Image (cartoon, rainbow, N blue to C red):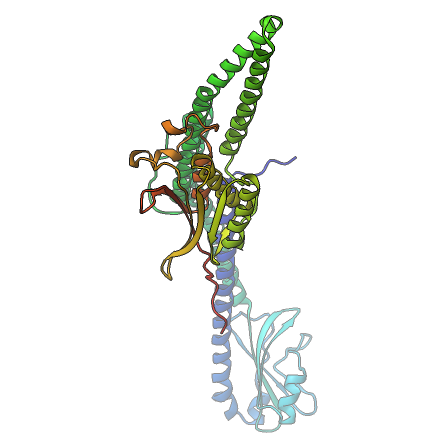
Length: 463
């Protein structure tokens, strides 16, 4: 398999080809311009003779014009006269006369005043200027283009040298410029290789300038920062998970050891209590692992983002909460609000908040779900608020309850992993929204306010 050329080599080749093609085009146009100018000079010379002395000749004088061979020097003007009877004067015996074609016949017929063209003979190329004589004869003035051809050959050699020189200079310059331009890429490559070897994500690329390569370096640094934050978050999650899993695992191990070594000596009530503890602990451990998996993944990562009415999502979450908590009493006041979200993920967030309201509040409480719009026409947000009658969260703890495994002292006796609100916070943040907790105005409970940006149609209006 043929190895692909490096970017530096490809840029060098592209520069060389571009310059070579451009030089060829310019030289070709210049060659044509030079040839045209030289031929025009000959035409002007022939025209001047034809409109001057030649038109003053009478037939007798014309008959005395000496012969001029086609092999005469290039600058020689050759006069050839054709009479109506076919006699040709000016063509030496046993030599080829100038061609006489349809353009010359048009002069004889009077349909054209002059004929001006280039003709080719076995003696070379000639420029011909034909006019009608005073006695009905046809006078052809011609001049060989041999001297022009010699000049053009010299020009061709010069232009070939210029093209070759331009191609070489372009290759050298392209190589140097490509090497200089690719230095940031080389630095990026060396840094990426070093990071892959050392796993050190704290080593950014040095940025110099504001061009596209500098933007690439900035993007790479941003990627390193995001990877570093992700790694740190994973490390903290693992440490927190290890800490939280240690207690239930130790308790389960103790109960299992007791069941293995002393089951035969335990009273039936003690044995049943031990088994119930194991069942409860295994359920809590399973819930904790499930919440850890959800938190480790970006919530709803596999779910597509769609445009939907948040009211439908909120009402769906309310139906699920009612089915899960038949003993609770819910009321709702919702309105339409179009958002772009992962509906399954947002519905799970609202269900989590409703479940928490039931779990931590009194049995006879009424849980309120309300929706409203905030902001202005430039930035509008849909807000879902869930009000409960649970104990008011202290001000110092209102932000911390959204951290992983953080639980209030009053909630430690209630089953749970301490990850539910962290999952909600992560999901809402991934949707560009916010969630806050605040006390009710009468301090009889808490209100969780979930805010998401409304969908804004930025497509141009039809003309």
